[in-house]
Length: 366
Image 1 (cartoon, rainbow, N blue to C red):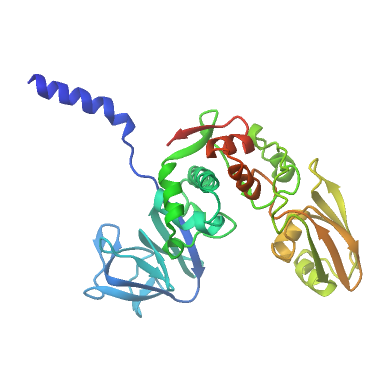
Image 2 (image 1 turned 90 degrees about the vertical axis):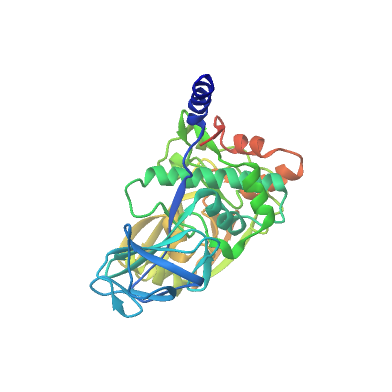
């Protein structure tokens, strides 16, 4: 009896530290066409807890939508299905391998394909996609902590939605198991479950490639007022190939990009307002229809992020060809990855790097 009481006491003490594994729901694609799901072994197709038995066992499924989800030309009449691989197997979506399950939802007359995967496994598809894996280990650990934190923040923010975040630059770039890398796995394992916290809440850990000057105040850029996102000095990223850049953009491309905003036959374009870090906040456009003010971030999105790598730019000349000089790559908020690389090379630990770029946060385990 004493042993049973002792065992119960020990288990009660340990219980708070045992948490259910966090999972992420990442939207991979949304299409009105066909998604091809394959596996090296048969996989199950479930509607809730009920198996859909259109075929005895699936290894290839061509999935689309009609009245419901269509599997290999058979209409299941279901709006949501979960595809689960056998233990040790992987599912491939249009040729790309993913760990975990695949959820199919009817959406906008098509289908949304969502990967449901454990958070630590999700990071295995993020870290090599967001940072070169031959960089210093402390830089990779830094990326692991902030990517884990960002994912958890988005999960909390999007609670109740069909998915937590996209697999693109609009969330974090995620390429599933196709980018598996042992150094990334090591960085994830060495920082297991560590996240950045501020005032008892998961921090929002934005990051970008190259700051080329002070990092940005998130309040100026997006109206997000966080004490740890006010911007810091970042003088170490000069070895980045995007520290400075030039672009030549045909005027016709600019007009096509801005046409959806009612901008036609542009006469001039110039920066209109700046942030305290020197980046453009708004651009002023004079055109046939009058004057239009456009957020610099929207101009980047419409032209393409590779065409306009950052909002830290100036107009060198305006004519049939728009010539632009700029600095940095990305929005400039939060961690500068190239700065983190140099800090790691100079001997700083990942926790020091995280606390430098997000002043006031603490590192805790979720």
